[in-house]
Amino acid sequence: MTMPSGKLIVFEGLDGAGKSVQIERLASTLVKRGLDIHVTAEPSSGSLGQEIRRRLRQTSPCDEATLALLFAADRMDHVNAEITPALDSRKIVLCDRYVMSSLAYQSAMLPMEWVRSINQYAVPPDLTIMLEISVEEAIARRQNRAQPIELLEHQLRQEMVFVHYQSLLANHDGPLARIDSSGSFDQVEKNIQQAVFHHFPELQSE
Ligand code: TMP
Image 1 (cartoon, rainbow, N blue to C red):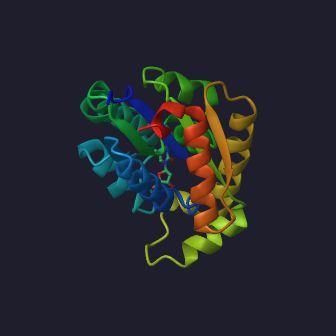
Image 2: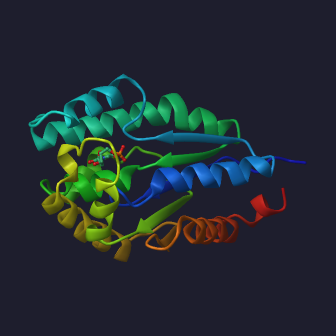
């Protein structure tokens, strides 16, 4: 059996859209098919990603431009240290958030074109899976979690992020699957699988 080429599949959506659960489920489906999977996330687990998470827990982490640069720097480090080597070893990389998150979140306060330019060297995803959910539902789901609500998760901010995601989706070029994430986890899982196999039929025959 020849392993398919490496693929970067990125998950995007509001905080509370269900990305982590669905990434876990897709990873387990693909592993059962004998595929080599690498699951990762941004902010990354590297030193820059840890610094971002530390700052996000503070009430005023730093100015918006510094935060945008930190996200972009963490991304380049993540691409070079983790994503590209995994793709080179023909792995399927499932990444929780990527450039589109910076465009949606950081552009709430900064010019979109500047945010795009500091992210220009990030390798483009082979597929972006957008988990779509309303701001109200995303917030309700997060309130059921035991984690503290981070700075960027405040409602007003989420509403701005939602609007940005909508405009990014309308103008997106590159492979994209928009999935309604308001249904049951099982239904959403099924729809994601269908989208993945539609975009990469070679994975189904493994
Ligand atoms: P997480 O909750 O998905 O782990 O992400 C932490 C927060 O960081 C979340 O509110 C989204 C935000 N974020 C950005 O603002 N820009 C980015 O580029 C990324 C990757 C995440």
